[in-house]
Image 1: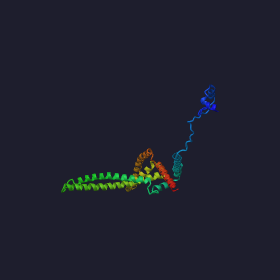
Image 2: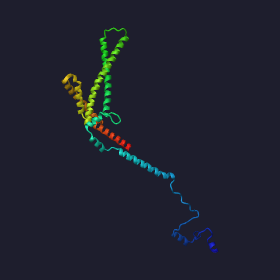
Image 3: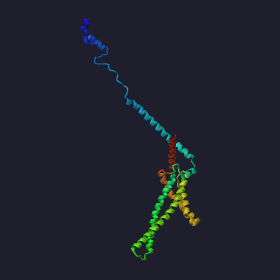
Image 4: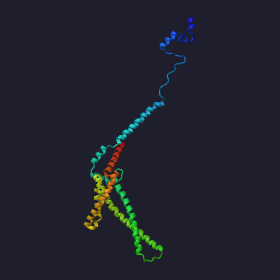
Length: 279
């Protein structure tokens, strides 16, 4: 044993002391694992993810679920083409007229009546401004002509009388003609819009018919012949003006059927949204 201790000193292995060529060839022919003293076995590192990374998949799952729920809700609120066409096919002309002259569930008037009201306001205001100016000019010329030889006590009195005549005549002329214009414009607009809503179609015919009836009402004080002539003249004017209006509506994609399509789509979306909120 002592000889063996001398042969293998403490802390050495045979591979470190056997340096013969035979042993080196034997070691090179086979692979033996080598373990060094510095390779101390360490405990396995904790490979579990931290607490924050463990909660990330949960948060992502919650967000994904919420997005899916929102998409499902939006898909439920989407109105298909089939729903709109089904609703349009169930409508009648009298039903559309009834809706035109009635308020919705929110207390608002129909778009047709709102359009007629705004148009009448603009027409009346424009007519009042133009006719009051023209009436004032005519009153001024008449006052100067009638009082060309008149003698006034002061220049202020003459200017004051002239101003009173001009303002009064302008107001009377503006109110009179704006009233007449608004009345016959309302007849024309109501008739044309009612025909278009009943047919759910825009064309030149509703303007031709509405203008003819309006022209007959304008000449009703002249008897039957006056009404006939007024109807013919109004129909011709309606044909010309209606062609221009219809062409503009087609270019801007604002025909009656297209507007009504958008209204029904909005109505069905609001109805479906209300049902989803109540559910």
